[in-house]
Structures are given as C-alpha cells and as structure tokens.
Image 1 (tube, rainbow, N blue to C red):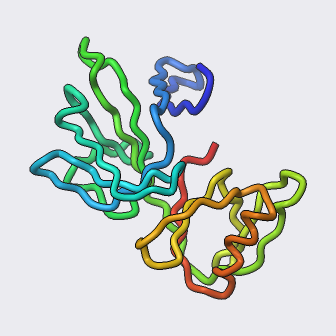
Image 2: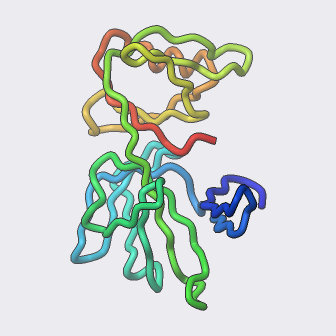
Length: 179
C-alpha cells in the first residue's frame, strides 16, 4: 500500500497475529460542527484552506464507525470542534460503502515563538510555548478567529513570512497524524 496508511496491530509474544490497515481518501479535516440529526460533519479542508465543507455521512456511506486515534470508539455526538479527522472507505461485514473515521485530539496552546528552517526545502520548526514543533507541508491557519483560512507552505520562506504575524501571540495548534 502506498501513501498514507494507518493501522492497528495485535501482537502475541512479539509476533504479529493481526493487522488492520486503512488508507485515507482525503487528508486532514478539522471539525467545525456536527449535526447529529442529519449525520453531517461541517469541517475545514486543510489542504485547500476552505471551511464550511460538509460530509453527509448518512447519504455518502452505507454505514460508519468513529474511533479516537488510540482505538477508543466514539459516537458522532462525541466529535468536538477542532478535532482533526481522517476518513477511510473500507469493507465491513461484506459492505464496501462503509466509512471508518479516525480522530486526533492533540492540540497545543501557547505563545508562538521562534521559527527555524523554511529554506532549501527544510521543514519549518516553530516554538509554541517551550517546545519546537515541525510544521506540516501545508499549514492551514486563520488570523481572524475562523472568518478566513489560508495555507502556508511548511517548507518555504513564503510559509515563514505568512506565519511571522503569529510571533508573540497566543495560538492554538492542532496536531495531526504524525507520519
């Protein structure tokens, strides 16, 4: 399997006895809101930096299950604003129209500090609080509390320039699946 793959594994005395691998159909979505009656998630598409995207689970899939990244089962009503999620279309119980949704809840809050990298293709590292974090290839951000979203390249001077305005500001950074 090429690309972004996530899996759960069962070991018995150090031997792999079971692996369940899934491949995402789209990367990095962030929950804005959930309508449990319509079974709809409104989200930010972080690849495009566009918000108010809709995922209608009831009409798009025959069924779905939701898990925290550690495997804990969730219900749709358990999703929270700023959860980062990924969707994998899988076959389950003979049905190939099933969605498995994995959720990451790993936000970091603190003062945005120094940045390094961003030249010659080196990934930007930014300090938030007292720890440095490597930025994703594309960083979706908002300077106006969600009115508008933009994307910065996490490996370029242009990306650094776009993120400079955060220096010294309190920020909320949403971490995702680390590859």
